[in-house]
Each structure stands twice: as structure tokens, then as C-alpha cells.
Length: 101
Image 1: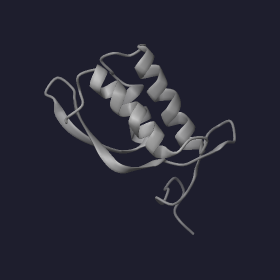
Image 2: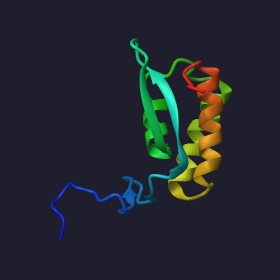
Image 3: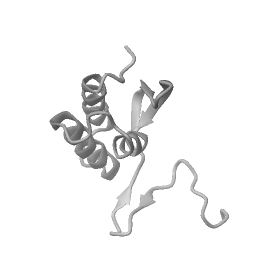
Image 4: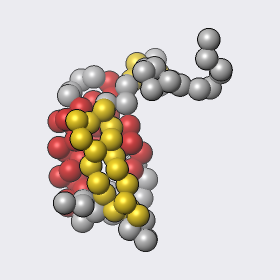
């Protein structure tokens, strides 16, 4: 038995609504520059992308931002393939000028 409050990578996540969620691993990480200093982050899954998109995102509220957020959330519930969410995230990152290509 694992200690309370710790998740293994293979464990599904559960929201307070009772839906099982996964991290939605991407086939390849997406590199983005974030923060004032432009720190490079490697976004490897939909969960990480959602955390970034719901934080301080430069173009929050844009059409591409909303599409990426929806796609990543749907990838976490298994409704869409994780790499579809990855592509949506790349488009939003490109629009926000944070994508490292």
C-alpha cells in the first residue's frame, strides 16, 4: 500500500466530480519559455499543459488558448488522444510567442 497523498505515475487522478483522469502523456515534450526570465520548461503531458495554460499565460482568453485548454482537459479524461491536445497546445504556445522551435 502506498502512503496517503502520494500518486504513482500509473495511478489515475480523480477529480471532485468523480471522473477518472489521466495525465495524457504526449509522444514528445513541447519546449516553452515561461516567466519573466524565459525559463525553459518541457511540457510532457496534458496535465502539465493545463497547469501552464491556467496560470500566467500571455494570451489567456484567445481562441487558440481556449481550444488548447479544452483539448488538454479532454485528453486527461481520455476523450481525445493526447497528441491532439499536444498539437492544440503547440498552436497556443506559438500564438503566445513562448514556443521554442
